[in-house]
Length: 396
Image (tube, rainbow, N blue to C red; front, side, top):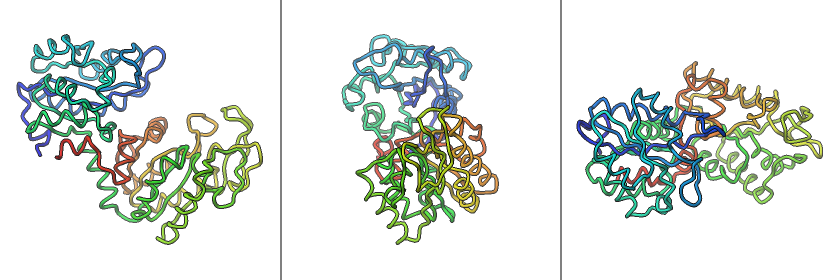
């Protein structure tokens, strides 16, 4: 398989699948440009080789065709500034306008196509749609790790139309290299920190990681299903009643395998789900009725910090509490800072999943960890051991 570094892009039109699914505010301004920024090196590599670039992506979840709020035109200004060049924009991804602009594209120029998901054929993996997209370029680069777990037209099907000219971009290369580093050759002790709202989204990951890690730390809303499974009183905290047995089994499996399974011993609970709610610190196994745990407490932070500090490999997916609210961000901030400190001391740390990435950026620590993954669902499915269609399409 050719890599982006060994391919000569001179006078070639590179059709690049990027993941520009970025959050916009009500003025259509980008509020987190992490995914766009991550794709810049791949784009610049083609341009520096005197090739031209055609960018395609989805944005949001449009239901029935084009919607202005999901138009990629809102990204043109930012992208122009980042690349320091004028960005041409096609108001369709496979229409007449797209083909005219693509055919007239000169070396060093960049064309951005309209949202792929304005066509239902994209998500359906339609071959005719993929073939039309393929007709725009000479070489195909997949640099959208965030969508690699989807068998969509632009990520999995399109590659067949470029039998000799299909490549991974730098993001895809880096993601696979760093994930393999954590899962295939981790230095011990290896600690996984899992948070977020629900156990249901993480149980497969927990089961996979139990065979690889030395320590698992559980936080976020999902911790209460585990705590209740162990006989704790969780007040009105988030709970998945149908997963109590599953949670208990995971704890028992960890014990059999000799994996240390850490649950918070104290929490910050609130009487309402809002930032200015009344709050108390209490035992995580004895939360008063009508109170809900919204963050881990200081005792838990201290215990978790010690585990992280003694680790050589750290995987973090999911916040410890409702970090979006300033009164319930401390547990997540403490973990983020401890991971950064351990990394500075020589540990290898991988941060992945939308909320963890948002947290590490919120606390300005992204430069102090080893790697920040751009793929939430794709990263989780890779950890679960599933084959990613977007990866298979290039490797196959």
